[in-house]
Image 1 (cartoon, helix red, strand yellow):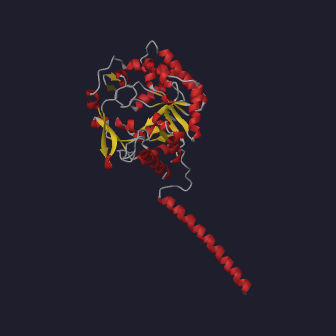
Image 2 (cartoon, one colour):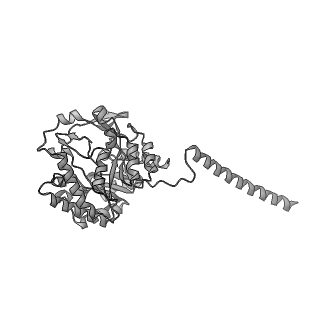
Length: 373
């Protein structure tokens, strides 16, 4: 009787354990269903990155760069002026790029997007007499970027501000929610505060210059792991500061991709800039995503549009007109497997000289959205 009772107790415990495990699994499945998830959903391939400028490179032992890794970031979206030699010459030695890549690797960061600056190839944009020297530099950079297998090489549209010495009038700091500071842009204020352009250009001239740049630089990345991404004009206005701009709407990107056909030719999809012009951001994601043209995403939120409000405000990622949960879901639906980054920081009380509090907020917000998929 004693042995029989012991066996019964063991059987009871075994059955209880199996029952508890089954109930736990069922509860988890019920939770996933309630959250709109399929239990077989694959993990999203979207990754989180950051942008930073030269001020982040001045700390002892690169402790400021370590901050990015501490909040769970692995990827960086950089401007090439952070590489030694670029500011002086518009190009750099391969050893200097390696030194910068290695420096980031020490703190656990990889370059996802290396962005050239349009002012270093202005003559090429204008299809001027010195264009070939500038394009040759872009070609050398393209070759080096592919050697280091940097996924995205950014080439810029010609910004109207470059014809007035890159001045950015029309932006003022304002406050929202609890006094955080953000930048507001207004067309009339910008025009009133800017000098007249030094010269006039035409849209045809800019298209001729841009296509020539792309036709010569694109071959440097063909067959590699690097792709070239166009951000477009910001602010996205066809007429601005007395001169035309040409990459403003989705149709302009379509023309660029059609004129220079390549699997390596795509877009840095800036949610803020696309929304500022009043275009449907979700439709844009589906449009370019289905073509395999989404190479990088600036996950920036704004309030207001240029057609309706003649201006806009760059605000906290959760405080703008767009529902960013819908944006990240649209990216996931087209199997976007690149990086999203916050793009422009806001300014929180006590968050100077570096906007670490805002960046930590933005990264945490983006991670939460990705985990909800």
